[in-house]
Amino acid sequence: MDLIAALQRVVGKDGVKSKDKELKAYQNDKSYISGKSPEAVVLPSNAKQVSEILKLCNSNGIGVVARGGGSSLTGSSVPYPKSIVLDLSRMNRILETRIEDGYLVAEPCATIDEINKHLENHEYFYPPDPASSGFATLGGTISTNAGGLRAIMYGSTKEWVLGLEVVLPSGEIINTGSRTLKRSLGYDLTGLVVGSEGTLGVVTKAIIKIIPRPESIGRILAYYKRFEDAARAVEEIKRKGITPLIAEFMDRTSMELMAEAKRLPFPERANCMLLIDIATTKDSLDRFIGISETALRKHDPILVNTAKSRVDMERLHAARKLLFMATEEKAKSTGRSVIVADAIVPPSEMPSALAEVQKAMKKVGLEAVLFGHIGDGNIHVNILANLKTQRAKAEGFLEALGEIALDHNGSVSGEHGIGLEKKGLLIKELKKRDSIEVLRLMKEIKKSFDPKGILNKGKIFD
Image (cartoon, rainbow, N blue to C red; front, side, top):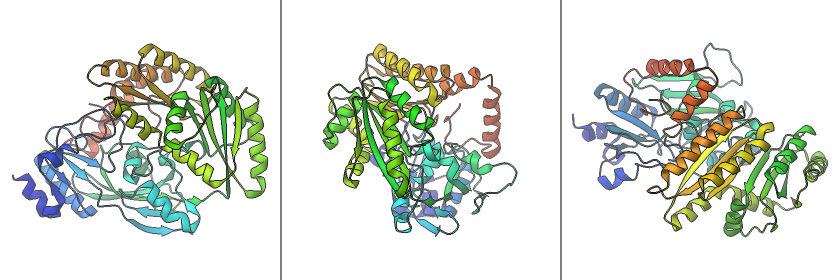
């Protein structure tokens, strides 16, 4: 079979890439893991074309890797031998907005920022908020069950997906869930597809919940010498009955990168910075901010400041969202790569878990940036490493971080998924919980959806 000609018959000549230079651009995502050049890259425009492509590949034993913005951090969108890449970037439309019913329908490559820009005029928004929201796509965030900065208040993506249009490996198009805010329809196939990293089917449309934007938001910055004090200060806010919209922590290296990128000064003695957003009504904002500031001051801060203007608030938010890109630029300028580690613990375990993470960082001896979503216990570490000489050291730290999380009743992945990077850690977690049977069940589910194993082979488990 002439694969290129067959694909061109489905999407047209301009919808297939087959030159070596074009294919090489798809070998990598945002992770440090490199894949193989695909046999072809195909760009469908609708679910029918996706269906025809999957039928063709399923019949001929050709692997398929679906790709949106390519922002995976665990290698879940890198291709493997004898596979094609299904580039969904042409499927980026917002199809339907029903404010009165609280939902929006969009194609998989609408970005999170595009969706929220569209909702601005309605004073509504879609809560999941990954730091890469400018290029993270709806389909990609569904694929990994992304969380983000607002997860402390709103949870992760799975809480916000009402229904999906999914193309199965056989080419059959199914619709899961509904346009209603609740339903009881037997097994939750929508929830099953969310977080499946493109191993069960290709999402071609999503129905997502939307809600009114908060009436007022206040932003507080607090600086501490010790991470443990910062973690306990956030606990104190929650004990006062306030759930922050955002509760982020950043180490000194993060602050230095943010100062360089956005000219944000910080106190000389500070080793940890908290960025706290409080969302409430106009009438209660000052009271909630006051309660939160008092809680933060109980745990020996160096400085506590409240951002007064919208300009200051947006500058701070932009600096936090640029942290990965700033780390990436620094790594590139010194011939290194960024290896991103992600784990999660119950929030009450954060003080002791962070102390252990810092020890592990010192032990590995590589430059690293420590930050994350302190309100929900999600720890991120960006490791700067030379992949030729320091890869084993960095991967040893990834293992150590996962084990620290498990020792504190946590999980090896908070929001980045498993991909290729964390397959071993997934097995460790299941064994720790005496639940290795879960792996067998996941493999059976995979086999039921994808009997020939063409979709995203080798991701999550072998």
